[in-house]
Length: 418
Image: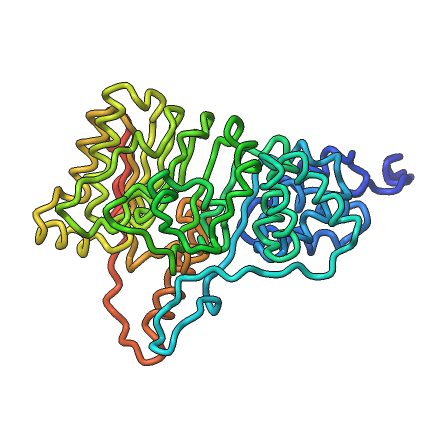
């Protein structure tokens, strides 16, 4: 008589019987743009999966800035995870939040957000951290006041001070006015001549920013600069030289070189903006003047100022044919081959991307290099942003191809796609 194997007589092993370490490794594979929704769904499967999902929601945070208090509250109850949080990705939008005057012109002003009714224990813990990390007593007092009257920057400062091993600060998908932390990073000229909106100056955050000077490796500057205005004769807005460990920077062309449409204006010196530790530079909303800026960057590399610089990525604002025609009209260097020859001479890898239609980072909801990891999502967001600009009665333009090219440090082609 046939007898089934002994294993048939034992209960079957399920995935929930796996060690916690393996379940956490499974959760670590959920890294795509919609990971918050998928992790939230995973948490509903069982109690064990809820623990796994919650841990990765906290360890790989990506949230709207308005939820910063909720995130702080959660990590306050999971202190054992704090040393494992190395990346912080925040997004926000300027849409429907820009005040306009009677002529429908945007008003360049910053409107603080008052704190809701928080748990007294939460407020006490925030004030405790403020007292530790504020640069001095006057800054601590201003920080305490902001915790009540201007809670977003106050909490952002507290959050940064709470994460001892933070290495990556990804703010590319935010509205600049929402991130007053960046007002502490502007160049001395901008501070000296008071070119910022008055309420957007948050000097008390200097203590929080100082904690990042020796440990931050990756910084993405907010791409949405709507309603921010600077004088064009001080083109260098930011100064990141204090971030001595900074390796990768993602930044918009406008933040690199304010009002670059004036072709007679000399590009700023990259040595006034970046530390020597720079390895990778990613530029969004690039224009025909990007070549002139990169000429200075490559010259600095060849002179030994950026010895570790190994890669430049350029994501243009307009289609290839539009940028090429503008460069020809204004007698500027060719937008593609000019940059290629510069990087080859400096032994720097180069990647260049021209979109099928205008690519504004804040309209597609994220930085291109992150979105391009999910090609279908990126294409859909590009098209959605395009139709939104066209309006309900817009006429569809001809769809132009993506132009995408990459070269290695010796100038040899790695990939060419048109």
